[in-house]
Length: 107
Image (cartoon, rainbow, N blue to C red; front, top):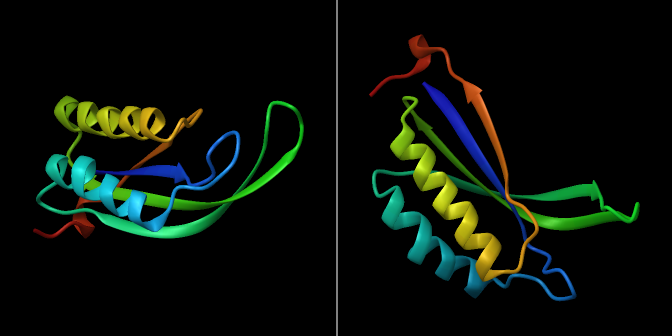
């Protein structure tokens, strides 16, 4: 099993922020259809350094899924990341993949 996390920055390059309504619409339109069996979402704060060297802080939403390694799931995650980058003019969506001890997984 693996845990995949996608990190979505809420600041929009050039100004503004992805609103709650926009985020909720994205979840309903893009994430739910790809993971109808379930997923977890949580919010956080992100800090990073831009290409110009300036420190950036922004609100972040995190999507997490648990699953067996599967190219079809990889494609869904790629579709979600690509849709977010296009819809909100983002430079990147970060993917973190972590192996999970199967003895802890119960279904």
